[in-house]
Length: 423
Ligand SMILES: *Cc1c(COP(=O)(O)O)cnc(C)c1O
Image (cartoon, rainbow, N blue to C red):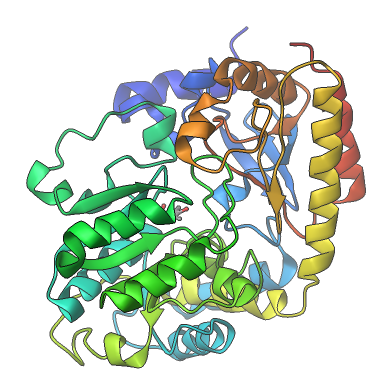
């Protein structure tokens, strides 16, 4: 008999393209159908057929406190009866902005938006306005949302579904997107040597988490900081994933490197649709209405989203990030050992509360190497794990997420499932 997820998916496919509202949710490349989720609590998901899963997707990053963390749920319950949108300023916007400015060293002023995509496209617009230049250096396999200028050699769903370039994006737009391999400072130097006077910004994921997990090599981010400064370009850290995950102060706090502009999303909304861009005051003062660079949003600073974000950040301030990092690293090492013992090439890099299973001997340091990992092995691993109640991202080009509420028992159950996988 067909289960409820299949039935819903079949209906969805008739009225929603591909049956999903974001391509990364489709499970085509792992030869599966998506699960429809009916509820979630802690690090556990329940599908439409009542089956339970340990969640390592965490809504692609936001749920670092797990689902339905009590103070976040309470903040929402408190906010709902006060109205769901005003289209006028509210105190919660000032409070969330203060929490972000206090936590993130490179952010002196911040503008709230509704998604990471809006954050990166607005930050690039600002960088272009500030410098009077159009070019942007982007790294192959990094994902910065789905705005036109970033859809050249993008990671995440673009990589998963092997979408070459993207129809609908004018060549005149991506012409200004200059590509370099991740971790390749020489390639960036060459781009600057050839185009330095037309490069407005370098945008980078300070730990790349949309081509699988690819860590910055020592000196890479510092080198970008130096090149941007030397050539009068702005350095944009896209911390939509790493913000409040690599550390409370984000990647810039952890690595001690200050970008000119920062984009965030995911965690800062506590599971509601939020993003933000911020940076040095001299640049942010150029944003309308203080300055001429237009940016706006009907629902920006939405009171429910602000309430969830504030409750999340207040809680995170008290959490033991290094404890979670150590537990995640130990889990990743065990997972790697268990899979390696089966005779498959495997490497499971981790940082903070993120990990990634690559079916390759070495952890990749750029997109070409990430692509060389065995996607067929990944697909069977994904299916065998899901059958056993372990919910991983349905792509070898995505990153596993761990929350503060994943327990040792959850890890043990996951490792036990991995040990039963037959390739
Ligand atoms: C998810 C993500 C985005 C896009 O955010 P949305 O909220 O999905 O628009 C941008 N940059 C990075 C690094 C991301 O991981």
